[in-house]
Amino acid sequence: MLILTGILIVAGGIIGGEQGMVIALIFAAVMNIGTYWFSDKVVLSMYHATPVTEAEYPKLYSIVRNLAVRGNIPTPKVYIVEEDTPNAFATGRNPKHAAVCVTTGIMRILNADELSGVIGHELTHVKNRDILISSIAATVAGAISMLAWMAEWGAMLGGFGGRSDDREGNIIGIIAMAIIAPLIATLIQLAISRQREYAADKGGATLSGNPLYLASALNKLEAGNDEAPMQANQMTNATAHMFIVNPLRGGAFKSLFSTHPATEARIMRLREMAKGWNR
Image (cartoon, rainbow, N blue to C red; front, side, top):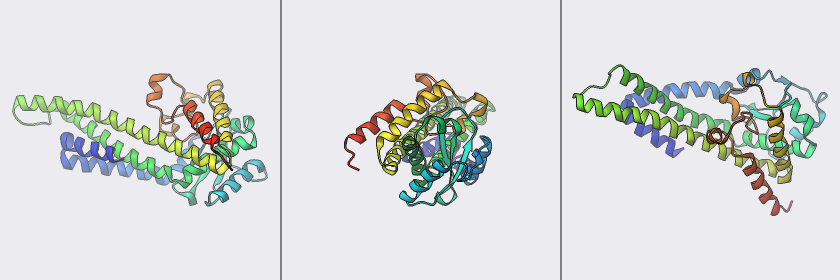
C-alpha cells in the first residue's frame, strides 16, 4: 500500500501535477466507494445468485453457522448460484453485511470437511475486511490509471507547454510514465490480492480445524474449473478475484496478472501447515 501511494505521488507530480493527482484520487475514490458499499447486491445480481433457506440446504447452513460462531462473526446470508463450475465467494462491506455464495457444482464434488475448509476461507475474508482492503488498493491504482489517461490525452492534444526541446522531452517522459506507472500499480494491486488469499487460506484452515480439508478442496476445485470452466460471458476480470479459485483460465503469462496465487503453491503451504498441526 505504501509503494502504491508512492507511485501515485510521483506519477501525480510528473503527469498531472498536484491538482491532477487530487482530481484522479477523488474520482477513483468515488467509483470504488460506490462499489464497496453496494458490492454485495451488484455481484450477487450479476451471477443470478438466489438466497436459500436452511430447509433447502441444511448441511451448508450448518457449516456456515458453526464456522461463523467459531470465528466470532455474525452468520452471513447464504446464496446459491446454479452453475456447474465448482467455486465460491464471499461479499459484503463488513461482517454485519456479508454473504457467502457457492455454486451447485461445488456442492456436488466436495464432502462436508472440504466444504468447511472453503467456507472457512470465505469467512476469513469477511472477518479480515478484505473487501475494504482491496477497495483501497483499487482506489489508489485507479487514480494512477486516471493520471495515465490524462497524460495520454494531454500529449495527444499538445497540452504541455514550454520550449519545443523541453516539450518533446516532457512528452516522452510523461508517455513513459503513463505506460509504466499503471502497469506497476496493477502488479502491486494483484500482489496484495494474492497475499490476502494466503491469509484467508490460513484462516480457513484454522476455522475448519484441519489445513488438509482446504488443501483437498482446492485440488478438486482446480481440476473442476479446468473440466467445466465458467463461460466467458458469465465472468469478468472485475469479479474474478472474489472466487476461491481463479475462474479465468490462462497460461504462464496470464498467471502474472492473476488475482490468485498458483493453486499448487497454496496447497503446498497448507500441507506444510498441517505438519505442525496439533488440533
